Length: 301
Image 1: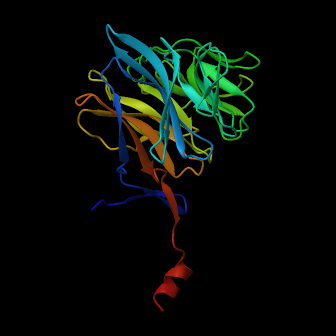
Image 2: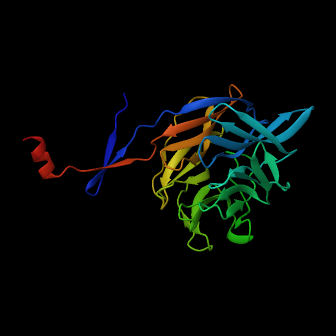
């Protein structure tokens, strides 16, 4: 049985929950260092489907990049994107369309509209009106020296220099991004840059729906490139790991459900060449008010 640790914060208690176990669905896709997913998994608006980019490599016969769409009823759809594309996809929060960061004309993937744009690692604003894109990073977990810029795709408005992997805040006023292995936030107008982590091994930030936290990937075992999912307050501070440690596996690239109660991420099993999608629940610490003296007296009457 796991124990709960209570941390006093003012007049309240912040209950640090035990590291949750996650539910993993193993996909019939290979992860072996050559074939594997790129970008982060992306929920559909109704959260019944998941889309992501998958690079299938089987030399010398073929290599191609596919848009994978997985449904909770077991349906699987695949669409060819390009020969090479390592930039990720993003599902609109309000419509049945997916942004693909590769210069392809608008198309159709089994009823889902797709369109290409320049950049990498797209992120939709919550109102579905804008997309932020950033620099391309060559490795999903180990490449800390990510260079480039973050900008909004439609207007080509530059938000920040030297950044990548942007994600919008819930109020669409700020963006969290990666700069040289650390997480930063910045206003959408490019002002008020603020560093919120300093490990040098952080990537793939995802802002929680309530705006209080950022989930992200941290490489905890750099030589072997094992990664875990962590959580930090959006203003910065101490980080905490929220995914289980399993030998030979990495857990990375989180995405929040709309209610903030579930966190989805990839599970990469290097020992078994397996790719999975995991769901962790209730990873946000729960504040519990300290009982007042009157409530204590009532309890013992």
